[in-house]
Length: 436
Image (cartoon, rainbow, N blue to C red):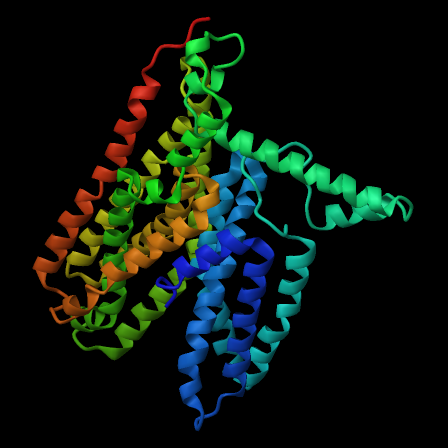
């Protein structure tokens, strides 16, 4: 449900924007926690309703929060990957509830507390988040949330009509500036530099140029692009191995430990503890992309390449590194030495945090921001279909060497994705600078 419902929730975010999407997420989250709080043994079937509501509400929260990276400019990818890492490590909340339950604090009290926390989400939605989308690149003098409220209060009670009229004009101007900045972000340098001083034959009519930009940046063209298809294959293959490993972990440890339940429990606890460090590992991936993006953009100014090409090129090392980390993860898991599984657990949490953080960051850099919610949801939904292959693979032995070899070869082939992205960026990087 978490993956399949990401596409409709992404559409809701793109279509109805931040406030509506977050209110829906708050409703689902609060209803789910209240159902769990008041569920008894006689009404346990309600958990089959509560868990999907909690999953869908959580992923909708994540989608609305990922746009916050747009506010941080040079650190955009770092913030996006940080949110993904926090989402991956969120199971620590239920560990806290479990530990409290062992100290005689009831599950009902814990989940009622989580329900009350919705007050914070409501307040943040109306006072610390925009009603629409956070644009990227940010237009000049962009403000939202409390900044807008304080701005209205400081203007005084006089001129109420003119106050809102001015705000409406400012909003239209900001939207126009945002569209211009976004169009420049995805235009080639030749199109970006064309102006009144250029020859007449190199200039396009405004309506024709706008129509061409819309066709190039349409949702359909994004989905049918080779860039998107390869990214779906990249994510689906690596995610399938992660799901397969987690699903067979208990039987794998049991086999390696010789049915020693105490040793299996110790390694299972070690695996659970490592999952909490995803929030610490994920930002390093975003930091890598941000540093490379700044470097390539400086080079792009010298060579005349577009800024969008420089941004896209910064994702290549991250995509390749994620695939290589997963290959190391498979290699350690395939060696039948139980002490080596500590290294397997570390590589698993690092590669997982890199995987989902890189996925979100790549979609924001490689495609127009107005389609982010739908593209993010579609990628997760399609990868969920591929992840269904885990069930026939569960029938095989957890130590079947054929499974490790086949998954290793499949992930090795995922290196084609960063390679082709690099090939796509390379012609732009090697172009000579434009002379006046």
